[in-house]
Image (cartoon, rainbow, N blue to C red):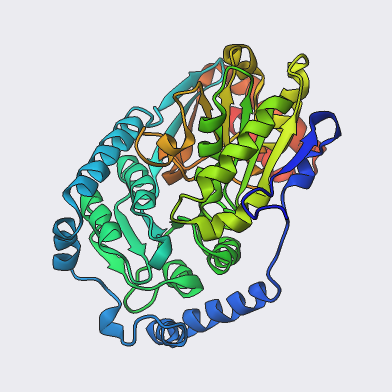
Length: 425
């Protein structure tokens, strides 16, 4: 009988379709249930939130909704000193990266106008941080710090039963408004605003299928969101220079997130056998072994001979992983050819876990192949570009005549007249 810890799938690269590796499971009825929650919170405000909080075992009264400033400040004293130090270390590195990546104002000067591209921060943002067993203080840092560096004036956070670690992260970031609410009702509160929770312009942060669906629905109606996050995933490209034990550890780091997490490794056949054995052995020793019993079925070993690197590049770009690790002797040869990934970790020292926590990059990244058209959360995510156009008198006639020509061709005579008014004597 095959061990539940030894359920990895194996394919040959030439026979493997990247699109088939993800499971497109969709919970039936989620969209309708979420729509109902949004509607009630929108119309009833705090009472609508409380209805669902009571129904799902959350807070029981409106006064419990907002966490006090004292509780947030004291949280730093309630967590182990080493954890507090690690969170502060991570925050420092994230802030340094963000500070150095603030978009600069640009001016383009051509023969006809001076065009200035100015970036300005949005006014408010709301962070959703999962609670309970899925409490991730690191996500607070990843979402809050880019917003603060961008210059967002008002920053709030919603989290069901926030842990001391989550509140300590809020204290480190200086978040003063924290609400102990979760699920789709929390997204609704931040999107529409209630008597207690203020309306924000953008909502960021991960959550379950209800939270994700709520973000999808409010985006089309009232505010912006970061992205629609799906199951976490990693693609590792490793030749014989890589260490099978290390590769297995990196796969398990992804797979322990949940039963639907995905880890794909492109390697030689000999390495595949070693990774399978190591993953099985290591999984049994980990605290989340119950989850790994199921998620190891999503460990996919794709064997290749590495003579045709272009085939590997094409596979990677088509899969467009959230996380990509390149552990090759010829990593620098492959790297320029990779176009689509949420974040790329190069070399044996660069494990994805460093990106999740402390190195300074952001771990809020596109999943499900959306890295083909989207990037991760950054300072720019909390800013918008405004173009300022100042037309020069010297180029006015040429500009007006060409503008009028196109406007008339499109049947917009008033546009043409508006342009030509500028050169009337």
